[in-house]
Length: 247
Image (cartoon, rainbow, N blue to C red; front, top):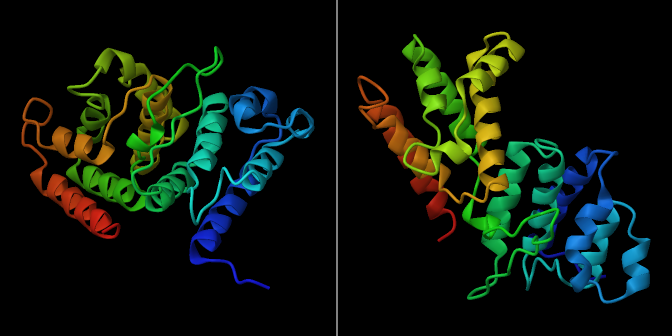
């Protein structure tokens, strides 16, 4: 029996992790119809009743093929799940899937995002958008908490700075609501608001490099009386390390 490749094993671990946390009450038809043109057999398409079956069918059709075609469409499935139920797939898992998708993407091949029905408006390819990795979220939360005062709040309310701010910005009332939900725990507040902002960017079709965006915010005098250059540089170093892993 042929041994699975490292690409397939890496994909399999993330896929199985996602399968474990998929909500039971998803509108599967709204998601699977986005892939109808990729599944030529009407009988097979109609038999798909769960997200697991959808992914398995895409694997059977070699549309999800880690070694040659990548796992772009698996990432799309998870994005659509989160569009229907925000945060159903946690930011940590989605970031790891995005990273592996980028790593396995075939050279000189860009697969179009097949999400352009009335239910899911046409979007830019989501690979342009990657969530903030867990270790950088932790770094942000730790350093902003140590700053004291409300610097953490100024940071969160500045998400979207210089972009289509009115389209994706986090409002004061949203931060206040999350602050109450998290009982004032700054680390949990920052994680929850970042996730909300990321989800909104994807839903509103605003492609943004999150790490570059965070660095830009932290260095702005208009936002912080004293720019948080040290934290910005720490994130910049982490960004370089991640980029080097793909070379």
